[in-house]
Length: 426
Image (spheres, rainbow, N blue to C red):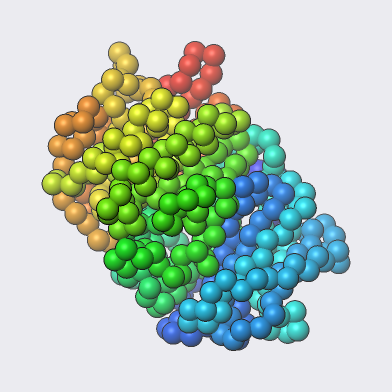
């Protein structure tokens, strides 16, 4: 897609701020301790990111911190937003939410103590309130050997899709939930401009859990939009939805074996009821749902039947467009058999994708798909990918690519007067 005026403005402001996209060599820091200048700056969407945005970051020492933000067209009109302390893990985590922002507007910002120990000025652009064309990226499990094995794929994605405004993460961002060094590698893989310049939507995977406990790093880094279920273990911190230029993005927590092993059915049902409400009240044309464990397992011997029993009917009933998952360390994309059409290249209904960005790989098999009334239209093993998705009016385009640029899967969803059609385009 040609660069939009919004992305052109974002790039211009980034250059003016001296914040070019960081995709060069990784810093030498082992990330054992936070630095004096804030690090691990991350931009997270609120429920309405067109008028508010949340930034999180970490410092070596506790103390007052502030977010300074100004319109790119009026850099002297700086608003100072006091930060709140959220956790002390390898340093002190902070969060600040800028409110009252103008939609579809470029801003420059920095975080720090406001007295010299601040980040450089960086950029963000609020989305428009209505449906406008945009691109986003989707990553499966990054997880293992991040610096050498996963980071090259992440950087290839950022280079190939410089106008992407969102990154969706389907869990297992790291391998060890509370490893500070692995979280440091994850941030380094994206670089400061990408973590702090585009919105990150993340679902927790099983490797974000240590036993039954969610990583202490999770909520301070991924605070979510705070509009999920108000009860259920970990659900208020990990389940939410955010609306972005005509798309409702919904995050669920599929870790029923970790978070709720003794009452998985009730825990999943709580999310199903909330999901149904989020879908029934969706004012937008498009819906994307992400969680970690696939409803149709892509690895032989695996099966998430409680998940499928709890959520599949709702996903189908409300005709969710994309269901983005990870966990099985392979690639697949498919649908329910009942959603076939007379054309072998066309289906209707939701698209279910399973992907992996990191180098850890499992065997593949479609037994769990076929045993549960589904088909894997594309299935690949030993293939690291990133996914680029563009949304433009009545058309959504999806491409799965390797770091070398090879397109391994591609399809288009069209919603028009003739209904909804999912067409293979590879």
